[in-house]
Length: 198
Image 1 (cartoon, rainbow, N blue to C red):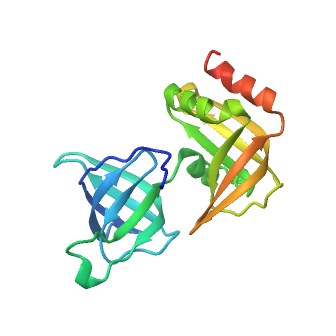
Image 2: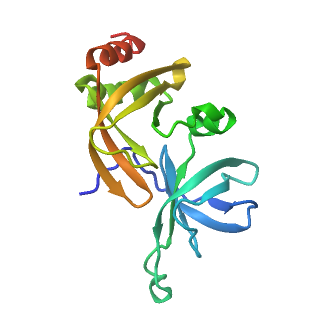
């Protein structure tokens, strides 16, 4: 059974998108904290970076950037019963910051963002306090390589960085899932616990 890290909500919003201008349109079928699925045809290629406008109502629009993370192609004769479109991953603040501050574009730099104390507490209970973390990367990192992972506690304006060893890799189209173990698990758990008052 497929397990998703973030709950999805069925929502239908009008969407306009494009690489340079908002020349294409579609509708969302579901949204989550990290992305959304856009029902449309034709479907942009995997890895395409898009500018996106989402109309919440007649007076409110959201503007952001995202990356095509998955595609669902449906034959014309099946479109009445199946939805074709693409999954869009929202670009994070850390990714955009790396474009404004070029030295942050370290190919081994991985970021986990937590917008609320609850999000960090949930990750702490699920994985961080056990000495590791799981993160998606657009670059391949071999097992046993050493990488740096940054925990961005957005709610507190704090960033923590830890060296980790890659212990397992899951490959999907356009991305790699990395299971990481902190090299100094005690220090990492203590630092994260401190942010949570534990």
